[in-house]
Image (tube, rainbow, N blue to C red; front, side):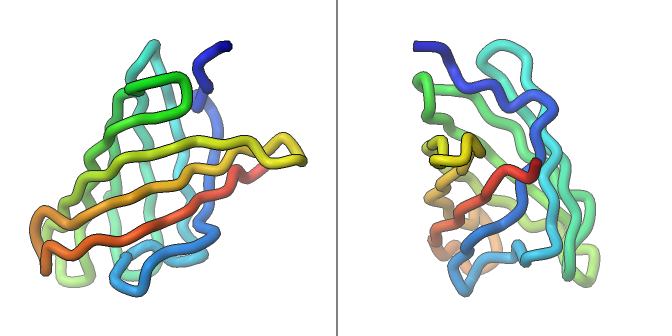
Length: 115
């Protein structure tokens, strides 16, 4: 099996826990080199979003993320991810995450590839 390649792919949120910041208008643009990947994102209520991650398996990864909140404050978290492929061939990223600041709560998010 081959490792999933995120390079040049875009994702939008399909589901997010209530305490998550990501809304439906957000787009994540990914790049990847070897086992490492990153993404930039913006959306309603935050700006300057970035994430960096490393694959831990063919379809699993660990990552950290940060953005600036509505008053310019930094918001920081980390997550584990599992990447699956839908019947239509689109990738889906499933994340279990928690905030490292803010209220330090946990949550789950799901992102679907935008074709």
